[in-house]
Image (cartoon, rainbow, N blue to C red; front, side, top):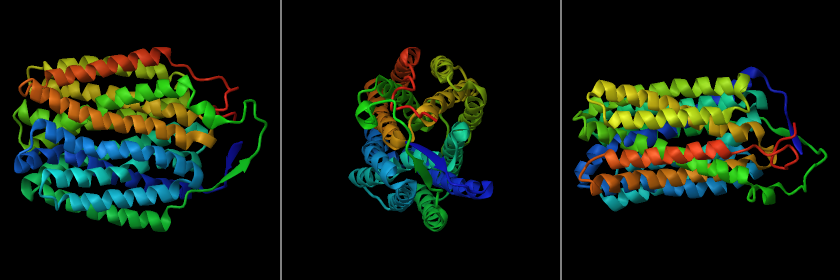
Length: 409
């Protein structure tokens, strides 16, 4: 079965995609805002480093579980319902985060908020295939990653500024309020184009879902994305605390300096998506290999840097490699996987990413506690994950077009 996009003006497509872009901004404001807010929250609630890691990780556990359901639902019902519900949950429970007063309360709120977050990436992956043709999907995906990184830049700066001026609770009230407005816009205007389905001759056994879960292609990508996400979410979760505790910066300084690596990652994501669409399709593994090696070296040099200026420089280069890795891995299913199962395929990948987001912050918090407040063991944990990414990138292969996993168009 193949799909043809209904005729729709460029302006209409861009407007629909801009609403999706706003949804990702809201989600990333919530996500990265907590990475800064956890500093005053931990002090107010007297949390250990391990407990602080659990606050961040609780969000990712529920997000990971939801991705599997969201993948199936997106394949069956399309992206609209999934995305609208997801953004509503993210916004409402961001608002409620500002009202908590105990460790258990914030764990519960963040867990429920994660259910909304789990639906957005998978639904958005399906939305890209609904809105865009194959030859521009990597660029479209890079723009959503850019939205996440722009949200990260804004969150890191504004969270530090707002938390330092009015308190961390005000930050979540503002994010939640903005998110509810975006939810209304999505509900009223987000109507992605339908796909016209046509039957074509199958060269496989016609059972792509059965083949999906037996595919070494899927599991290699899942492991690779799990390890790269371990690095991404572990690093981004603990970077503000690292700057505050090890480099002795205040909240405003933390937010301002942490923006620089995020901005570099933003640029790298956009450029990588453009290059994959224009000439590097089929060479994604080379991007992953180079990105993983550069990122690992920069992590090592960052925590050994003699000055904050050097540390930020290495963080910025790390973020370039990190964004290139994520963009290349996510472009692979968008470029090659059959439309019939793209939601379920991405659901498995985002499940892996969510589990990495659950494990990495807690593991790093435990390592920091276990080594007397030193971040060195935590950074070596991330470098080890990058080594696995390199190994997977060397051995992964795209299935032949005789496979029902692969788009025959």
